Length: 151
Image (tube, rainbow, N blue to C red; front, side, top):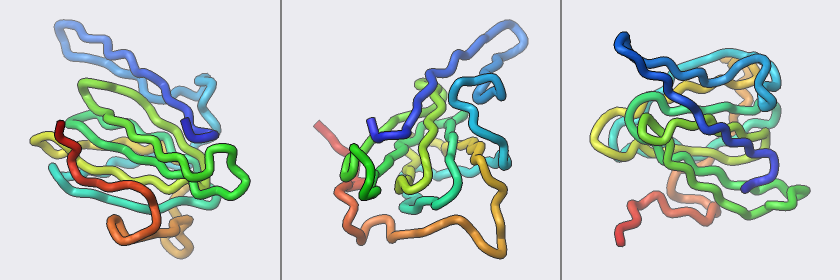
């Protein structure tokens, strides 16, 4: 696991009315601080990658569909420099993945429906000065191929 990455397996509580799933609480061990909460989506087969933040931690959860979330650690001072982590998260594998500043991240919608992703970053997005540093999804030095792995 990349240094600083935390994973929380989420519990779905169903009853005759529907279901409930807590994602992140202020009393969770992995809670840092609140910046904002937003929803983003990925259509099947669409890759949204790569970027990192210098300040913010992200805490991501896919609540509908399935998402391939990939992290890459380029940090010079990290004991896991060069490591790649791949997570398949979604309604059939509910989990919260938190990753620190400096870690490149991206995701791809997998399956047959739009993936709905909730992110609770520690910072508020600043339109005038975004804390985002981007690379092309496919043309870069990250040792990862977004193609489906059959076998």
